[in-house]
Length: 245
Image 1 (cartoon, rainbow, N blue to C red):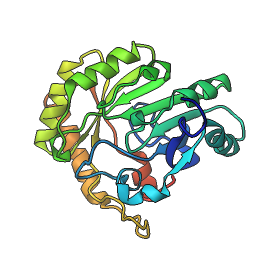
Image 2 (cartoon, helix red, strand yellow; image 1 turned 180 degrees about the horizontal axis):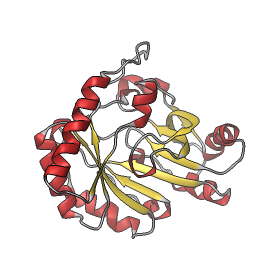
Image 3 (tube, helix red, strand yellow; image 1 turned 135 degrees about the vertical axis):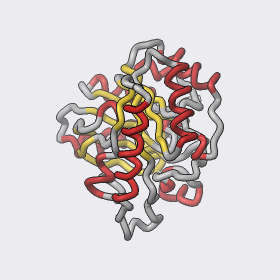
Image 4 (cartoon, one colour; image 1 turned 30 degrees about the horizontal axis):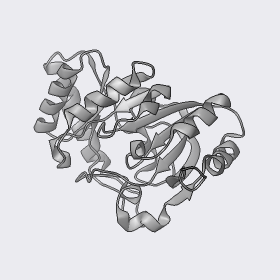
């Protein structure tokens, strides 16, 4: 089968340029293409508008050409990094978009929990694998995670990023890092205050987030886990839980 409709990508929002707020590319100017839909339902999800089917009518089925018109306008046709996020962007047919953008000189980064593996992972510039810890309420399928690494074929820059809320999450992060010692690991203190659906109140519990940040720094240094990097969600500290920044 062929045709634009079969190749459409469900898009929740496209925004930027702004900075990447977390992980290996923190601080890098970026345009975000956030897809709609996810195979997980994490208890503390901070992007429910791109996950829950309640918001399905807000997701636009878009062709590569339609997406690119928006990316091009936002970036002023000046190549930069495009972050493919979600939801879980791995469930969308993003290979043609990546190929089109690369031909224009753009770079692509994608973050996924590692539950769905795609052969086009090898075409990415950066792949962030973010398995979800016990506090999420989800179980990690390590075989699927291994398949993601296998299909990436070592071509993109690959990093491990884990959100940490408590001691169980921290222990999970230690075990995941030990399982993949070749991957750089980034730890992120969990966000206490998911955004409300209407986005009217973008405030955050910054004291709670910074308290968890200090706790996590202490855990890492006390355990002499010197390979781990502890980073906040910079965009949350700057703009709270507001969408589109």
